[in-house]
Image (cartoon, rainbow, N blue to C red; front, side, top):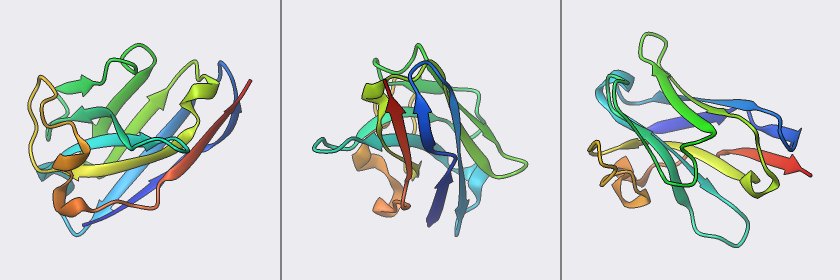
Length: 128
């Protein structure tokens, strides 16, 4: 599995960004997907996950109000729309395929990433 993230950048607080992610080595539409992030000095954490069809999503508590995960199976692309960004959103953002998905978010974790396959990530920096 290979994943490639894009769309990060330097923005001011209150602005928006949309991250994108594509995969290779897997059939995109056959796997649940997730977005994760890692801030300097902190552990990698789950942001949001989405099932194979895109009909079900799960957000970690801190992100449900101003982040939105979606996918376009026809084009093999995963998205993360980030609105009203804050300086504390500064982090490296990663996408990943997931081994399992459950609506309650039980498998929206770093441990459920398929083959522990991570991309290089895309850096998001939010200035105040």
